[in-house]
Length: 452
Image 1: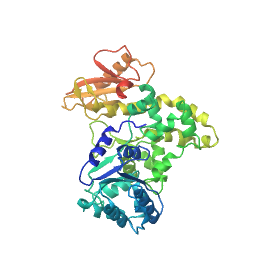
Image 2: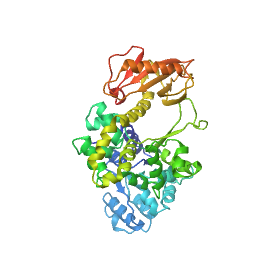
Image 3: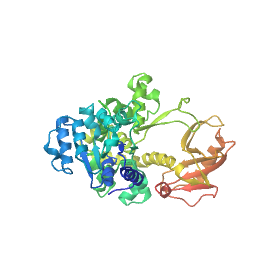
Image 4: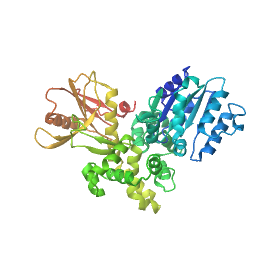
């Protein structure tokens, strides 16, 4: 089932319809649907080749066989290297085709000179009779091949698409479930379509989590290892850092202290994991990343958040077969756990909504000293596009929310904000479902608004 990705699909189709040879680069984390997207954009005049880790001669022979399905007899010839294969294919073509090279980093790993071969071809693309689409899950390697300024194919791609996780709205559509349930499921599976397919095999969230994630034999039980293997030689440091963040070590000093390392030694791995989208660095609203000393690190990917919150700390129990015991812990902590996911999804949605007749910029949390000198925190603060208004909101994930009390607490916090004096304040509350007892001065949102 193909869900969303409409813009990406349209861009692919548009690029492949061009009369001039196109170089298209797709990359992103494993299982996000890149291959499915490519197949959706394929036409009959295409060669789709999925690379693996075999030696170059075997890969060349395998690709020539795939080309032979379109060009009869092509695979009956021996090609000593990649360049001879591409040139021979080009000579054999009478009409333009598209060559899809999926899992491209596998080819580069065993043939480091391949990007330079493609660079040479693209520099003479007026002679080529085929579009070239490169796709890979190793984000670091794909950036090193085509995106970074020193990459062999830098500046030559006509389209570069980073395919990221999808939204709770897409999950709701895929599973055909109501928005509140979609948010709870999203807290486990995140926005990765392959995980959704695995979830859909089972009748309930409980059965899917126990069978596929908690059980040591489950297909997703060792998933983080596979994710990190795409990018790192060893996953020890990544596992350690994310485990500490999941356990509540959110400041750089705390992480460094627990690992008994200088903070400067962690900057690279933190930057790396942030770039991959696995963690995020939060700074209070109104402060800049360069100047603030209040940075907090949080797990950004819901599946990894779930895994390091419930699987890693319970490895011994799961190894002993006590999956039901761990599931009971998941169930008992689900309200607090999902509320954190809910807050972040509310913040992400703000720039897409019109609120009180205005559009707002990216929303952030804020924490610090209020006007009374006491520490306080606001779930969501965003500046309007015209800079005249300030959206201030709280996100609550409870079955029976008391809107009147939530409004009272929100107004109290707003009165103590040190940066709100010269702004028009727009008050907002985000609930699992909208309660009735609220004033007209506060705008209410619920799961349907966020998952739409």
